[in-house]
Image 1: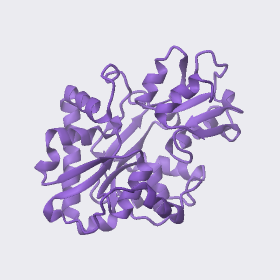
Image 2 (image 1 turned 120 degrees about the vertical axis):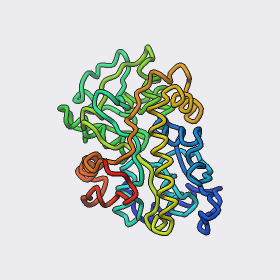
Image 3 (image 1 turned 60 degrees about the vertical axis):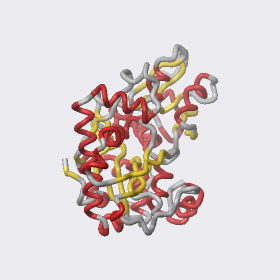
Length: 320
């Protein structure tokens, strides 16, 4: 179901239940809330917290772990969160419906070959050997009409199959591999770190790393805020971006520290911390890395009109 302003706003009440309303928030007090996910893609934030970069920039942030980008988006909309993390497709959908979210800092980029973060996995003895073999089968994605679903559709169609003949069902990432092994689905489209776990099971095998096959590189997700809020709190937004960018530098300079931060903040099994595929962590945002997924999102009718990358990029975002 396509996101509309009506159903989006309806979800806000449920999605942010229990959060303290912060519409009267004042950055003179140097306090605020940040919505994030317990995934390795948020490593720059993890390092910024561990190294004290936010405090060094004059910010005291309460970090709020949340289930997914959709709930985080709702929190930023309501004013309960000042900053949030979301996959880019949710931001495109929200923008088309009139919300003023803007990407403010580099996030996680998938790059073909070197930084693959996704896999389509099937049973070890499955007859599925190609994209076309998925026709008539049931494939699990974490959320319908979002980035995982989008890239699975594009990969099947690019590689000789007809994605319209596949039944896609929603299953959270942690539950995908058990569902596959139990025979409840024929294939799973799964993100790291769960992809690494599933790929190493004796009962499963990797069919494809579809994301890099579809696009050489693209921005998966990033940090965002309300443009209206940013206009009133520009210095705070700039401080946040500086802290995140320092986190990116720290990942590159201290790989052991970054691994420890991912284990702590994302709850990784230490045995898998060095085996999972990581995205590129970049300080800037390349418009081409945004435009390619915008065009795909429109092609597969997950947004009702085409967009330009500049429509969702804040002036605070460093251009790559």
